[in-house]
Length: 148
Image (cartoon, rainbow, N blue to C red; front, side):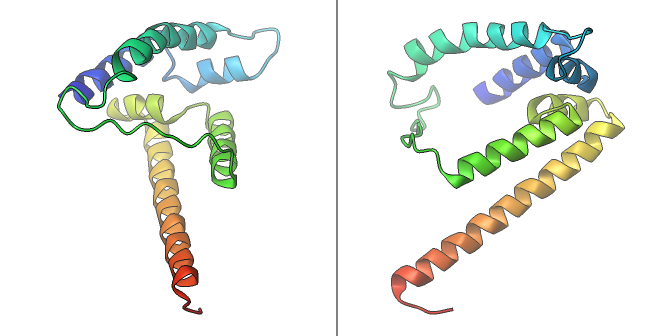
């Protein structure tokens, strides 16, 4: 229930700020005379809420409000998966002018462009899962002494 409320609040914030419109994001990413800095304020507002909330509410807890365990990432290693994922995200964001959060909000409003983006994003998720599964199977074969 908390995730639904948080998602609806996040979606409302994206809609109100205009960040579901790719042209607003592209106007921020392309620095020119008509540069639009509004995305900085959207990100800054999000950080003003997130940082104290995480530091004082999430980080000290071992369980979520619904009593599920909280699993925070422990790795600080910059590896090829992180770099490739970040590059793909950045290229997709730059080309499409929209990232997954605003795309889902826009998708719920039936925009044709966001439907295409959502389909491409879902295909990308599927490809990543297939890649991770194959990689995991191959590493298990190596560790167990099997040959391909």
